[in-house]
Image (tube, rainbow, N blue to C red):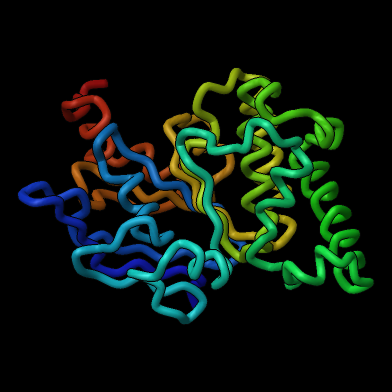
Length: 257
């Protein structure tokens, strides 16, 4: 059974069709990549899946629950988290506090208990800090717990945002262009992080333009072009697909090559 099932997902903005009947499944324990040229509808797809936008029609079912049209906080509580194409960190807060902020959906201490420093609140705070430090180590930021997020270089900010997304204890995480702006060494580290996240029991769906990273880490690829799914399959088959080559290069490859 699929962990995430997208069926017939369509999003229209007036006369513009950003998504046109897109369907695919994501199975638990998988790293699934979504690729396509600029304007293909990738970010709109993520927005419709994660509750930041509502589809015009179609279905999104996550862990057996229909989530299309849910508010983002409800989607997070259902077990799905995401990052954004542009990092959305609290720059004046430390790396540790950024991750702790991502735990708000899964902590239970109320304002009164926290203000009075009741024993239960202190125990939960201690456990949360231990978990936040574990997540920072998972993404390779163990030494950045006390650093201000605004002082971190771009590559580390990307990793911090992944750690914060994982803080809500998701079963599935959506990563929107996590390799954007990374150098070669940082991209290699990101690949290792994605493997560690997957091996830790979190299913990953990643929108990405870095084809080297996509071909290395993904179990399956969905290709969008102008809002439509034009191909789906394992990396080696997708990279040879004529429709995919045409979408990226603007012409069909010659049979003489």
